[in-house]
Image (tube, rainbow, N blue to C red; front, side, top):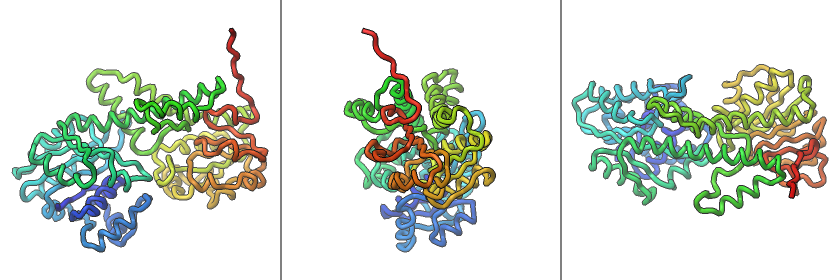
Length: 446
């Protein structure tokens, strides 16, 4: 099939490359000339394992192209996929400016029947509204499709090529059948539903996963007070098929471009129809507070006297295997430390440039290696579970630090890793590993 993907952000670029890998002829469109020139030169503007190799392969085979010419791309294609950004506004609602403009541009370029699929995450009712908007600018026939994406940064190629399911929202049987044929090589698990339900599936899925993360973090906080180990609790819970093992890893909370944006947007969607989503509000509140457990542990260790201390930060991306720092816990943690007179040294193997661009370059010593970051530090905070950090020799690490204090915000290290070291160690929900300030475990009265 001939496909145009509009938007070469994370979703659009990965989707376009993978559609080409399936044997389709794909044109990826973006208004950003610099980004298109980079892609045409074989460079990839985002970090995603395996993406460059797959893009190079399909460009060489003539199945993948990049352009700023939306009109020509639309005219050459049968299926148009909208994957432009819908960033959050201050209210939490999705900003629809980019998708509205793309829809108008498509309408003016159309030269015959097209299937127009929205892959961007959009509020319920958007596909119907966009359909009417397009009809104001063209008399050409077309069908609207809701095509939500469920890929995860860091494993996006795998998720796209081996999805749990494909969701297609349609009110045209013929258009739905075409989209089923397009995705059939990926999986037999294809859900065809009405458009509004399809739009809601994306928000509901992300809200539920965010809820699991905040739930296990609350359990972790209780574990620290009662002497239980959250990793063992989560493992025991996960054997229940109704619960499952995924998204039950305690830490300092979720970040990135999806969960924070989509949870706030769904709260706003509910509010717009006069419904208060109390559960999801609590999920967001718990997540926001969880990242500050790192600060609270530092303040406990140093008796509230952080000013003048040197704190090393390992990890700036919101998760490993990505350079995405949007809503990363590191942003607020570092900002708090700097504002309270702490000398911060920071390192991330991939996300340094993106973090500097978002945070600014002042007030932080940017380092190029993990041990360099820890050199002469009073404490080290591990915020992203990159493999390079897990592989560090802890005896060597302790030897370069001023004080051997390690706050493991992602539960990377195990008890056996710490044996033979002098680390004062704090993790999330594993009080038996804590050294230094001991947790007060209440005794049950019989």
